[in-house]
Length: 77
Image (tube, rainbow, N blue to C red):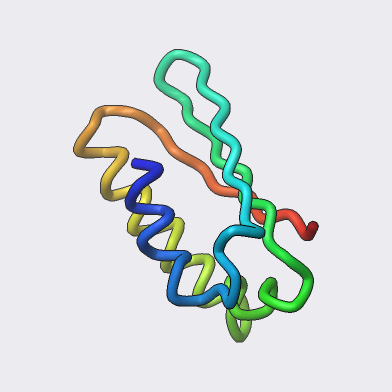
């Protein structure tokens, strides 16, 4: 699931090496915390939050297939 998240984020970020993804898992709950540089955070969130909502929806679809619950949180570095 983390590979899907990286694939979705990579085109949005100028220097992907600065991005850090942390994964916290408790049984069937997975929480991804994405640390994004200040200059790229608006691209990840998108206009009116549309981009991050789309990323969350795609991740939820993948999570349903894997029989888990996934959530995403974006933090500024």
